[in-house]
Image 1: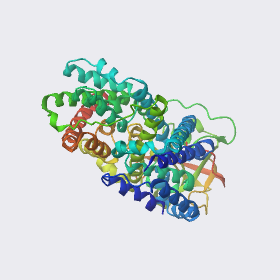
Image 2: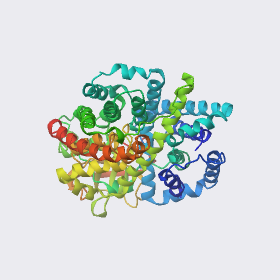
Image 3: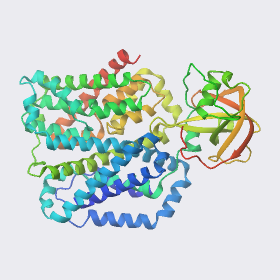
Image 4: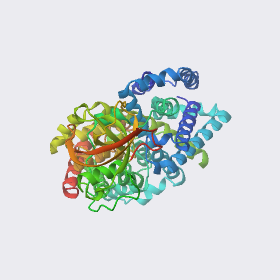
Length: 236
Length: 339
């Protein structure tokens, strides 16, 4: 791969990173807090590309000599950088969904020790993580007499029953772990996997074991539900 | 469809470098053709990938690892270019003690100031040897720099937000392994095993040009290997059933050996490996520490780079020894610090 081609690949890579991080596409892959660093990295890649291409166009013939010396240090592995470029620009795959959730066990949660009262409102909008933690460790005490609203997508749970799911990220989708909530009462019917829904319900003392990793899947008693569009950030 | 296209360069990358540079017809034209073909067939290709949930999830995980690693790679490469271009090389040999046994730990600890990943440290260790630094010290630096520099340790802290002791354990164990390997080389190493590299580098360029040339080279080089690592990581992530990994993860000895080998096979850039380790949630912290200590020191791309820069006789002795020492020391560090 000669240097002009390297410059073009750097330009494509920088452009792809900038395009993903200036819109909302990056939220499918990483945490929101990474955005400024992604923009910086994209700009740096574009700068390196511009410097390389300008230099090659001006002094194209000189670099042939250099290429001999550098030959074994610039293997064709650089071509591999086309893969993320195409992944971001052409495919831009969606955020992890029902398939990934079905492959992994529900996340193991940690006791928070302190469960403050639910936020104002009836129903109170809380995260799936918050509901699961309050169900498992607080046995629903802090949710007594209240209704809650959860947002997630449908995926296959234990025994082929659909569960409400949200995927939790630490850094990027490679470490994504699903949080699953079993549904009782007025269960959503006829909703395909991966469809986002908003569920209003109250604490249910039932729970079950996820056969994949033995973690606990809490249940919710559904009062009402409706299909919704995916939220801007699909992870928790 | 896209996989077929991207697989082709992988085969090329494995082939030994051709004795003569390929003719001027080539890279740019090939690149243009690939891109035109992909833009034309964009719709069907994207649709095909989205049709298969497994392939789609693979693509999501692969792209995620790349996006997550990109800022770390780019800033690491830029800082490493600053040091390569603006810090005089003679500085290193002046800064090291004259006695080789003392130079080894100092050079190992000096790895702290070289933010970069392992791909960057191989050529730097070569140029240190050229400048008259004793090979044992240069090797300690080579092993330590990718593992204990601030960017890698910061990435580790970010990836393990609930286990700050992981950062201490990683830095400490990596430094100890690097120093032990340096001393081992002093005792057992033979000069004829190493082919000291000589080649024109960034000398003779203006500082600005040298800086951008170093950036371009490192991003293309290290980035290309990062892509391979991300693909392997995505494959493991999608195709290895969680229950199977759990069986391995259950046994403390087997889990350590499994993750040591996984680190060698995955060949993930040290600036990104902490995020992959964080995702291996079924495994004990100790076995994940082994993964983080072994990865930056021994992996497939490093072995090939070391064989290229220092010669095969060196790489085939050095890499297996390092693997054993790193696994043992990291396990001990895990027992002491993480349990």
